[in-house]
Image (cartoon, rainbow, N blue to C red; front, side, top):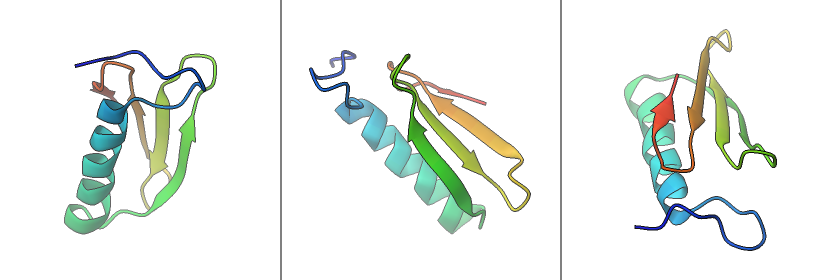
Length: 68
């Protein structure tokens, strides 16, 4: 399992799989809207802002761990 981004600064395959699972959980299980999904170009972490009042903030780290 590789945790390094590719040369273009894209998210890893593991991060994208984690993002897919997270989006599914937010929309199909918790019925929460997703407002923003953004790749932080400095850290290469993925930021997700969700919730009816934008109260859910999560970060998917390079090692695919999710931090609230």
